[in-house]
Length: 230
Image 1 (cartoon, rainbow, N blue to C red):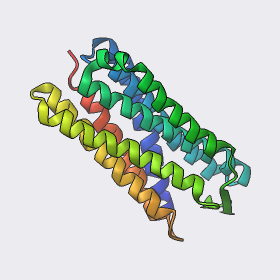
Image 2 (cartoon, rainbow, N blue to C red):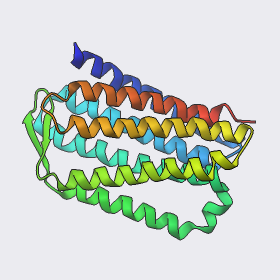
Image 3 (cartoon, one colour):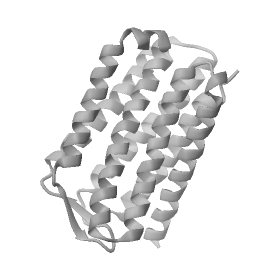
Image 4 (tube, rainbow, N blue to C red):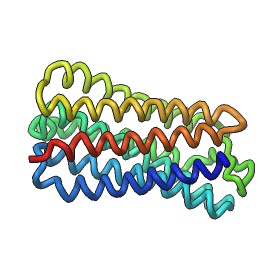
């Protein structure tokens, strides 16, 4: 029963993420923060790819599929968080500031690419049971690097948005930031769930929580931009 609920939330996350990404990209031209809407649409699309990758290797139930699509999903998450970080920067400082700090943004992109390369080419996924997609990370160092990167990016985005955005803004812009902030909080909780799930034997319940939180985050991120369009 728990496995079925997990599949349902994986599908919900995938569908909501892709729909939100499409709507944001379509409405970007009329958005008050055009570049931010485009970056967020890319981030949500990558979040949808993560959910889709999880569904694919779970349904195939073979080791090669887990090795390929689990890596694809993890790398999609890395870049999804990167584009959420870019979106946060634009929400606080505007797209003009973003363009003036392009070398800083390229540096952050390079960091994401390095972490992705480590996870792509390192042999760290140990398949315990292919039929149930039960895996273990051995050695754990690549996963630790991934977790540290994700935590650093999301926590930095959350703190930065709160102190330099929400506390210093009012009106419609503040409401947009609050919704985005709430979405980041759900992402942090999802990361905690993922870490806990990978340290215990029965991780199915935490996978369900993970995708339930990601679904909620997708809705909040989309609302942050869609509700504020002129």
